Image (cartoon, rainbow, N blue to C red; front, side, top):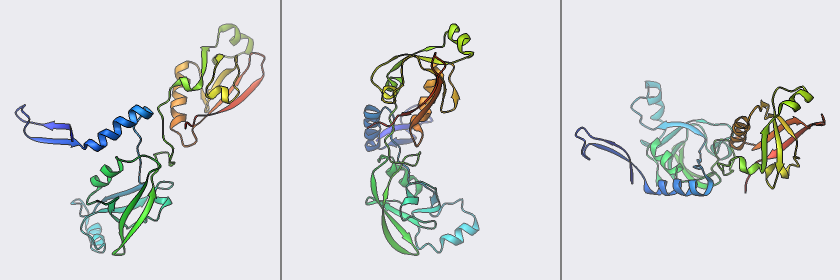
Length: 248
């Protein structure tokens, strides 16, 4: 593995060390090269390691009925997540994924770190002291299977400038970002035309370019991946556009 943390009382390489498995680092590097950001797949549960030393007496009594001494106890299913769409239920104990033994919560996290949204995995679990295998399609934190790309303003395919004073006066506006040129890109796909003045993006006021950049980043990470623009043309005609930000 690749060392992530080293603790040494002497300054030499003795003491405690923590390493990230090479397979995970390989996946991280590949994600950054291909997508610009790490793809994170979530199982969509809240749980704990069976036999956790911090359990209260009620929880300890509950664990005596599970029929296992290690694994990940499912305490809650996250609505809209991967597990909610599969046959995983509260009180199940996850003991394996894709042939890998899951003895504690850290094992679950490590296995998931090797996967991307959209991957299908086989999850072995114990329910009512009986073994069961279910197939789960992994989702991202937005609750879908889309790959998230770290796209910048270039995907919009337009040039902007802050609204000049003469147009502010003409249209009785105090802010806005004007489209000064349109080439191929997401805005062209939505038929946004040169001269359009953006006043709001996803209901946020757009006073300068950085405001639009922030709105774009948030929209790309949203479940729908849509940027809704509200604005006006120099003629006084108002317009709205829905910019589809999904990427193949």
